[in-house]
Length: 483
Image 1: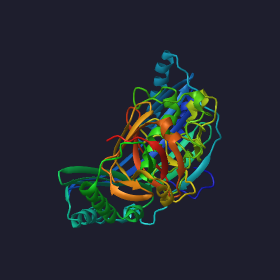
Image 2 (image 1 turned 90 degrees about the vertical axis):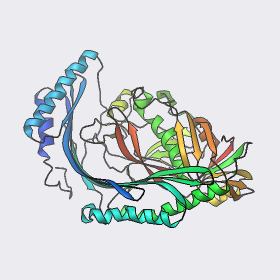
Image 3 (image 1 turned 90 degrees about the horizontal axis):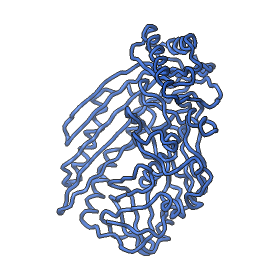
Image 4 (image 1 turned 120 degrees about the horizontal axis):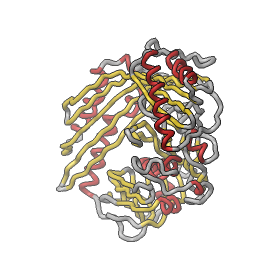
């Protein structure tokens, strides 16, 4: 058990199985071993055009084991939580190391402190205390609120889930970490039609905590507001300016820019070419750290420890303590996201970025909560400083190349800025820009930080993991829009 912790394991989780796994691995010759014992309970609901489509209730439990033998790494897992099955998993991992050794690639982990801890995220409204009917009421209330707008919304898709994960990590170096994290997730996709135009909006909201996190977002009011804004945009929007203009982008735009053009390319395994065949590459290289990528107004971190965040954790899936990680400080690349393997290769320390989506996936380098640090301005001040420009409140689509170098962001709710004031809606203004040009063009940040949720995909087999991304409104100078 973790030392000096008031957090106790649930009855269904036998922590001794993790200890048995690492002990047995040592007996058969492993120089290193770790085990992740996990149990996750999931409840999910879907409402499509007012009709419940699906409800899922599941509990998944198992153990994943990594071992290093003769310099090679092996991973295996099982959902059979008995000593016999765990022994077989360790032996399978050992056989995989033998196969890997023939390739000749050797693995080394960075030296890190051992940690013993237990922590949990408290719930004000416990997930298990609400009936399916009470949870579904959120979706039906949202549907009712959209209908009350009296707009033509032929497509209305809502997905809501809650999941509770108990995880125990142990390794042969002595680390012992027990965590209990409940999370909630809400995702919507709506289609609005008006005057021969069609617009779609989708977004995701997620947090660590009980069902109070769902109630706090006030989805009926939020989605009704989305429909009204989309309808107004479709009726009144004008084309974007053709000349170069200044932009003010709201936190939702800031967040997706940060996630795609900073978070992903700063994952050290991408930088080393390890993800090229699965999730893409990076325009960075190991020597990029310390070079300039943007203006002095650009400050971006990744921080798993933000309370209530969708990507929250205090220790990663290698037992390394989490902390705020500077990716860009005053326009200069501050560092990469590392696990113990990439940090050993690049001769640095892990910064606790190893994550796995479950016991049956190997831990790899991942983001958690990637955020542009707030500035000292008010959003209104940024808008007032622009003679001619466009304000992007949110977006309808984005894409970016495999190296995370060239990106495109198309606005949904957007407005012309004329002489420092918001004017007519603008129809689908699009930012097409390279990452260095984007961050070099940012010259001011507001103080209105927001966090937005995503389920970030990476690896093969796919690992879709909860994250937050966000920041404040930004001012971006002298950009030509496309449309």
